[in-house]
Image 1 (cartoon, rainbow, N blue to C red):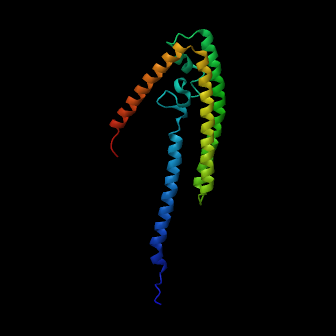
Image 2 (cartoon, rainbow, N blue to C red):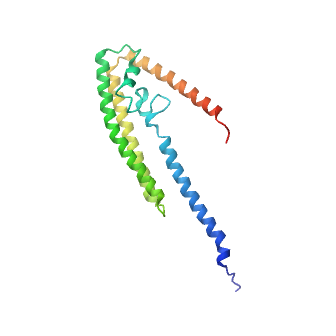
Image 3 (cartoon, one colour):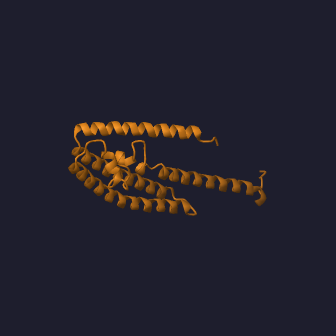
Length: 184
């Protein structure tokens, strides 16, 4: 029947430990969301532009990026015009989706900045982000499929070889950067 009584001073280290644990967990979840946004492949990647593949991201799809991609393929003026129209339409669609993505990132920041982080709300935002990413990926794939119909099989083969070369260069650059990065 001996009961151990704890004083407020004795409870303080446990409460402080719990606060640090909760703060660490919130920080870990926030870091995961931030890394996911940072690693989002929409505007970059080993194939030269994430969703854009050889066309680059939405900013490049309608301008010099398309011209650069078509240089050396022997594309006619008609092919260039058709592909530019395809990419301009995709860029416009993706611009609207990018704005939606920004709203979702702001919503995620609000969820994690709240005094009590709601796990269900965080999961909901994560699922919305995945759906938005999937929608953008589908739109870019459709643009690439439409553009591929404009090119001849020989032009697509040349483009494929250039994409492979670019991926090799990007992979080498990434490996070099990792080797040169100072140890932490």
